[in-house]
Length: 304
Image 1 (cartoon, rainbow, N blue to C red):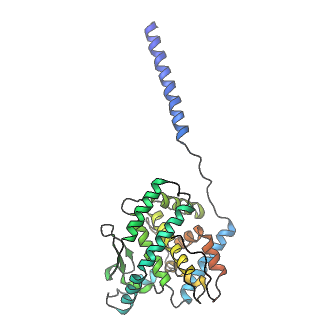
Image 2: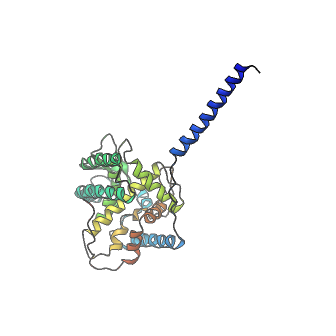
Image 3: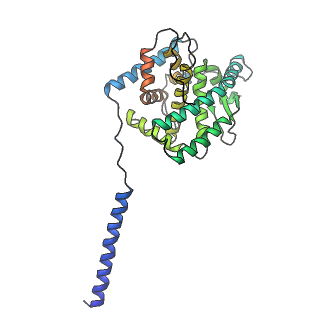
C-alpha cells in the first residue's frame, strides 16, 4: 500500500474514532438521572377504591349531588330559558370570580408541589396563564352543548355551558369544579404554556394508576385536578354544617357513571375519579374519615 493511502486511512480512522468519542460525550452530558417511578401500595389502592365508593354513594344520597354524565346524556335537551338552566347559569356567573382566584391559587400550589417554582421560564408562563384566567368574564348557556362545558380559545373571555350541565351541577362545589376545569384550559392557552406542569401531573398519575395518561388525556386530568383542588380550598374557607366529605364528593361525583367509557382524549369517568384520588391522598383521607355532619373546620387558606 502506498504511503499516501496509509496516511489517508489513518486520518479517516482517527476522525471516526473522535466522532465516536464525541457522540459518547454528548450522550453522557445530555442524559439526566431518571426519577424514581412512583407507585401505590395495595393499601393505598384499597383506600382509593373506598373513597371512590364514598363519592358515588354520596351522589345518590345528597340532595345537592351532581348528576352523573351518562344520566345527563339520557335526558332531553333543556331550553336556555328553563328554570333549571337559568338557576344554573346564575350560579355559574356568581361563582366565576371566586373560581378564577381559586384556580390561580391551585396552579401556584401545583407549581410548588411539582418542584417547578425555581424556573424563570415557568414563572413567566404562569404569569401569562394568570392574566388569561383573570380576563374571563362570562358564562354562556347553550342548549346544543347539552351535558358539556367548553372554551373556544379564539373567545377566551367566555365559558360555554350546556344547559343540561348547568342544571345537573346542583351545588356550588360541583359548579366550581367544572368552572375551574375550563379555566385551567384557558390558563394553558392555545400555546400549551403549562405543558411542563401538565406533563408532570400526567406522568405521576400514570405511575400511580398504571393507566395510559398522556397528551390530551394528561391535560384533561390536570384540569380535573385543579377543579378538585379549587373545591377543597373553597370548602376549607366556607365552613358549614354539611360534612366535609359530602361537600368534597360533589367536586367529582358527576363521573359516577353506570356506562364507564373513555376515549383517546379522556380517561373513563370512573378512572378519572381514581386518578384524581391517587394524586391527592389528603382528599382520600378527608372523604373516608370526615363524614360526620358537623361544622367544618377552617384549614389554612389557599395561596393567594
